[in-house]
Structure formats: structure tokens, C-alpha cells
Length: 96
Length: 140
Image (cartoon, rainbow over the protein chains, first blue to last red):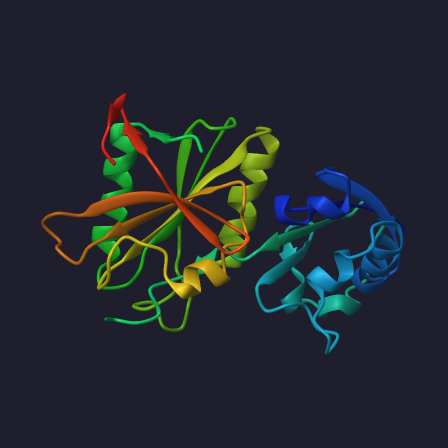
């Protein structure tokens, strides 16, 4: 399956500045593996050592957050768009 | 680094959002052509400890960034409030600054009558304060 993958600015150093790249695979995990073969370093930035999506990375298949639809094993179809979006997060963390 | 140019009505809308969410932290994004604050998008803070942290609702974040992408805009700024501490990035803010292209706008409501709005770039762990130009008048 051929899909488009949208890359956030912070990861574009791995894609030569491209904000979208094409990839292939039957699941999101395979799409990311294919991507990493062409753009080394991307996978490590998205997937933690334990094999799950990093806590502050969101991955969407079209409009759906894959955390709620099978995570990295979510199947993809031709023409799908996979979006990688870092969390918008932070905070004072202490009341002092 | 370049100042952040922020229309006065957008600065007001941002502070209004922070006040409305108090004592929780408010958060959102400003999108626009590079360097231009075009549109303010409020986001819902879904962090389990919203008084001390923020984490924008991932579903809303997708909708907002799609809109920005479709316009061929940038994430010009990410804003949030500190309700009990100064308008300066915390260790958590630095650790979770995943948008190097954006200015990080902080509003402190330590004194709710006098909200303090400041802006920073946070790149690879380094904090740099930038000026905020409101309607052509430098305010920070």
C-alpha cells in the first residue's frame, strides 16, 4: 500500500526538509519501517525502545488517532495519509 | 531572533482564554504565514493535572494543524498559561517543546488583574526570550 506521511518540522532533518514523503506498508508499523530505511533516524524519534509510540508523539491515520484503533498494527490502505504530530504540551509543573 | 508580531485583539483573546480556564492552564496555537500571527486556535487542555500542566487534545490538535497545513501556513506560536508561576518556560516546557519553528507564548496569571505575556523560542533545550510587538508597539 502506498501512503503519504506528513512529517512535523522537528523531524524534517531526517527527510531533507520535506514536509511530506511517500512510504509503503500494510500497517502503520510497516510504513514507519519503510520510512526509516530511506530516512534513518525517523523511527527512533517516533517509537520508543519498548516498541510503542513515544508518549509525546501522536500518529494519525487520516483523521483517526491510531492509539484508539490498533496502534502501530493499524492496517493502512492505498492513498491513506499518516500524520505524525508531536504533542503540544508542557506546563508550570510546580505551583511555586 | 525576530520579534513576535501579535495583533492586539489576538493578545486580548489569548489572555481571555487564560482567564476563562483559570486555575487550569489554557493552551492553543497561533497559525499563519511565516512570521505572521493569522489565526488563533483555542485547544482543550486534557492533561490529568491541568492546573500544573497542559497537553492539547490530540483530536483538536489534528484538526488545527490540518487547517494550518491546508493554508500552507506555519505553527507561528504555541501559547499556554501559568496560573501560579511567572511567564517563563519551566523545565517541563523545555522538555516538551517539540515545535522549534514556533514562538512559545506564556501568560502568567499570578496577578490576575495584571496578566504578564512574554514570548520565547525554545530550540534544543535553549530558551531565548523574544520581543512581542502588539499592533506595532513593542510591549516586551
